[in-house]
Length: 269
Length: 114
Image 1 (cartoon, helix red, strand yellow):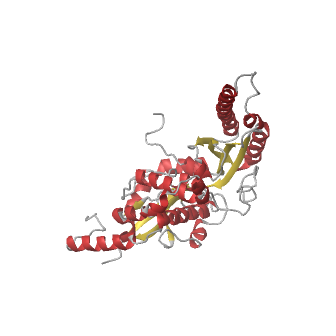
Image 2 (cartoon, helix red, strand yellow):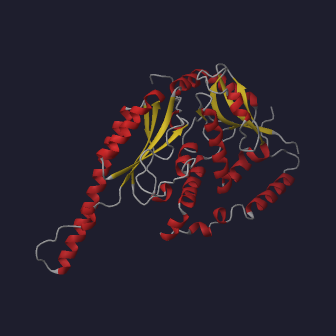
């Protein structure tokens, strides 16, 4: 049984010295190891290079990989390693993160892929150069006073009717609050998008996923010019100030995961 | 860039973790599994399976205590989740060896002949 190697891809970076002037990609690579604890290396291509790791096929070919993915512990560990590698590279210059579990059987197919997509990859890298992804999640703050107070006491109806009326009013309040929050979230997203170069809205997370009791009303990602970060922060702060009923939470800096689209079709449809 | 807080500029509630946490797992999964550059490699895995896993892992890790409070505890009965690999890894290994045996010396891990 020979230990055949597959190739796991972490990211695509510009070939040659980094324009950002940060640490070199090579020195960043030296400090990290990959999903199979393997050292990382560059597969050079025309103008762009892939950050790769040689992983054992017996764990990473289709069948064994699928088996591993069914193990949540394994999945979580490798997701964190994959992200850790991408995140470490960001300090050395622009990085296009690969989707998790992009695996090749031959290094030559990686080189061929770089060749085929070189223009789009270079364009995508250029688009994110000097820019950083920030996440902004907005939650509906815990129920407002008016909501928990319920309706103002209705006229002298019977206790049963009064109760039902009160319940209905509470429900209406809650619906209205949600709806209002949704509209406010749209406005916040617009304001933040205006301070960013690109934006994306991710699906709202459940309370279990976010780890917070309050419902999430916005899960946005924004690609922000590093130079314009103060303006973006100001936009976040003023949104938070303008919308007292909402909690605004910022995450990041992220590698530009949400802005890696290189398109399926040639430009211009 | 490193000066900016990773945990939010506006910690609105004390729930916000004080220690610099690399990233909330749900945020991480949503990016690493659902986003990123998609170029088909030689190995195809079913993303739907992963999505399902994502949901499970989100539920599992985000807040086990909270979920328990809410009466969600199915993972404790789900063999893929309850105790990590448990016997599954061993079983998988045995099955794979058996498969290899049955297939004689045809390689099972590599498909490309050329």
